[in-house]
Image (cartoon, rainbow, N blue to C red):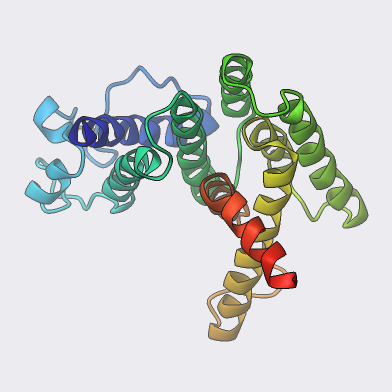
Length: 247
């Protein structure tokens, strides 16, 4: 079963590469077919096998030998591994649908925000509808926690954007509203804390090493994704550990 989930995740990862790279440009995710951006060679089915095609072709186009970005197989592999990790961490339950939807959203956001520093409204709207529908049949306890989580996630980021005079992007604000549907109030707040902590460490190290320059914006979406996944899978354990450490 886990092998099937891995294959499914790898295939979706390949599709998410297309979505993440095309949607921000207003392009169709169906046409044209996947092709080499250098020579226009249309990829055959054998050249579209997730991860393996990259390995066998040694990271280059079969026709013009132009290098293929390592991001493609990494996204495919990461999606597959996350899809397998979900049932390993939480078991085979209905909630697994929420987990896979959340992973899918975060993977796509990683691509769009790193590549374009953009979190498209179209993607957020689609996943908001999916998560609302799923939470109707797979509700949190209490059921209204999804509504409150969306309101708190959106409101918190909006408040920060206002007081920082634009320090938080509109895409980040709306993304937290969508994440709140899946996470609820407690975990969406925890996810923000984790994302901010990781972002601060990354930014600090970047400044110290000279990789980042003060005042230059960095995409916050990847940190939000890591924080959301950490809170979703480990949040209750983290909160329990923290409360016990205070006693």
